[in-house]
Length: 159
Image (cartoon, rainbow, N blue to C red; front, top):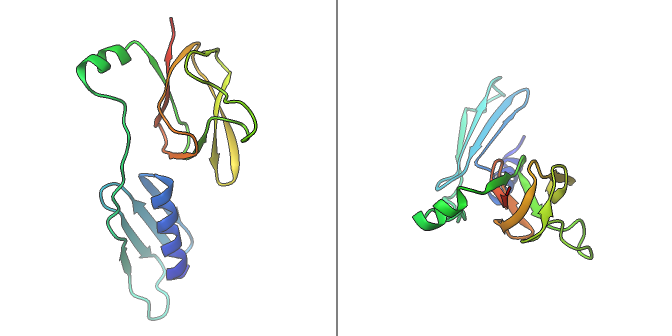
C-alpha cells in the first residue's frame, strides 16, 4: 500500500463520517480515528527494505455532527419515543430511487419489518427495516447524507 492509497483512504473515511476504521493486511496495520482531529497510524509488522515505521497525520477536520435536541422540554418529550438507529455506516436515502416516493415520512404508521430507508455502503443498498410499530414523529437525518453506526435516524411514537 503506497502513500497515495493511504491518503485516499483517509479522505474517504473523513467524508464517510465514520468515527474509527481499522484495516489490517499482511504487512500493514492502519487505524483511522475521526472526530475533532483525524489521526492515522500506520504500523508495519514485517519491515520492508529501508522503510521505517510511519505515522501520518491528516489535517484537522472541522466536522459538524447534528444531534437530537438535548434541552429539557424537548428531551422529556423525546423520551416517550423509540429511536430507529442506523445499523451500518453509509449514505442515508429516504427513497428507493429518485423517482419513487419516500419510504417513511412524518405521520406515517410503520409496522415491524416495514422498510423505512436504505443505506448505501460500498455500492450496496441495504434496506433498513423498522424494529418497532408506531407512527413516525421525526426524521432526524437529511436525505443523501452520510450516517454512522448507531446514529439515530427516526423517532417513532409506539402508542
